[in-house]
Length: 260
Image (cartoon, rainbow, N blue to C red):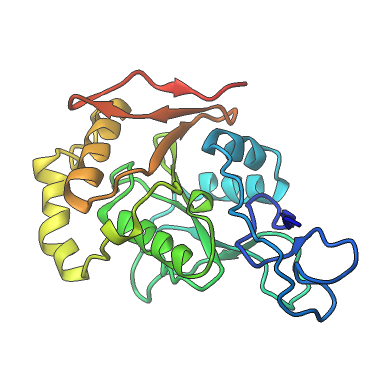
């Protein structure tokens, strides 16, 4: 018998081992007190980011958090949420959104990752580059590695960024990402090397450039300097319509809209 996965997280696919079901007799698949009855736990199916974004667009709690962040882009500090799977034994039945506080005395959010963390949502404010930063990418890498250690499918890992120029972006993981190729960067390396390359070499410090320039240069930077390959990036408009952003031959391709 093959066990199935039941999605009770309010949007994501539960990690392997959370709420498998399928045994009509109550044994195996997590049923009443049985041991290993030889039931097979398959890999959960991989839905596309487009399908997941559509699900987010119908999730009231996610939409409330997104609206909150859009209203915070005029502040002088970042705001954000950590997103995690329900904690076993807590009675929780949906994905959990925990509002993040700032590092003491700074405008930057304190993003810590726990075993159940699979997402991050945050805002940038006027004066910050309206694009994921090297620190953001490092947190994305941390979430991917954490997911691989805790049975969370890599294709459910995401990061949302809301900007004061009206752009909203998402990075999505993929089950094709080679976790062994990823490295977490020391903060000194980010501060002294990556931030400088990001701003100077890739021109991301120029705030009056077009969204397309930010998109192209960021995608190249993420792959070239932080070795993140296989992640997928999307731009999402105010109506919730998303388009995948890709680069080939060093140039930004025409965005690929998600199917309606």
